[in-house]
View 1 (cartoon, rainbow, N blue to C red):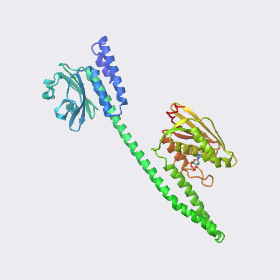
View 2: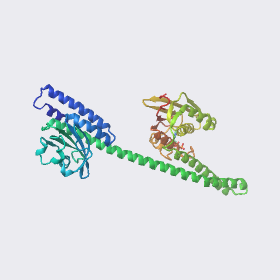
View 3: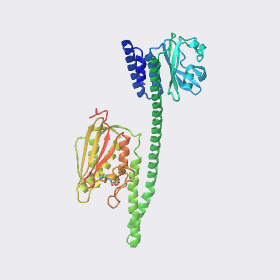
View 4: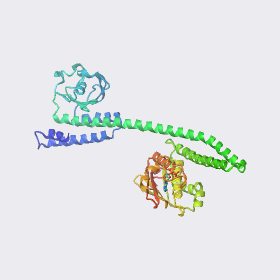
Length: 422
Ligand code: ADP
């Protein structure tokens, strides 16, 4: 298209500096409009850009942007020395924009009163004497762009090519807007269905807690009161029930935590150093003491997020880093954070058993585990919760690890505006 424009512009007078200047000016305007159109996110924005560009490009006395509205041409916008037809609808067969869209080709008219395609009565109240009209989306037009002059003149090939270049960019922009809107609608529907599913899991898990507690209490009462009188087999069965309910209770607790993380959670500035202090001194204090784990961390940033979810994320990762070591090793966990462009990259590194490469992605799925319950107890929900938290905060989470060489879990979060990106 650019080559065609260039050829048209300088055809016949290659060395004419006036011609070259017209060409360069027009190209600059066209490039600006194309750039603006590529950023448009709504049809209104496209209409606003085309309204100005269509007239400026050729220096015409007027320009219109016409949308195909089923069987009608809808003159949605105009920019002219005097009013044209803004806001009016005409049947496709009765006006030149309809002809252009039906025939999928441009129309250049030197004298509108001698062209049978022009309804003279519609033009009589206007200044228009000549025009060019081009289709938007040539294969299957959805709109048309027109240029009008108050004098009789045949629009040059260059003017037609310029206007068609604008129309082609408009067509791409309109398709982008449709795709963008579709995507937004789908994202919204997906988010709503995710929230619904989270809410449903929360309700189910919550309702399961009570009957499970009853089973557990009664199994404990039986063991306590009749333990000695019951035979070995009955005691063994009661122990199985008790262990099973313990596991189920732990599973429900993890499911409830996972389901309680909603997109609509409150966000604020979160001091991650304070959160880690609390996790180490309170939440995981017993585990850290029992395993003699060494937890190392320095300055940590203030990020933008939901404090409870971020605390859960850090707690799960630190807990795993302490848990997944071989029996002889004293756990050593290092938490660091680096600033990267517009986000923070956190890393939780351990000296544990490491993770096979084929599990690096899978362990973030719900219930995915690399080990049996006997080796390392757990529900397989913790990392899925971490992923949910990080993604709700617009970040990424991944692991770098080799078997027997420890693991580093990395994730990104955005800085708090209030902290000034500290
Ligand atoms: P859980 O800890 O309850 O098993 P997670 O979702 O937290 O569930 O972890 C899933 C699996 O990922 C674990 O079962 C384990 O196999 C692996 N894993 C997680 N963290 C580590 C770690 N720091 N070192 C080695 N393996 C890990």
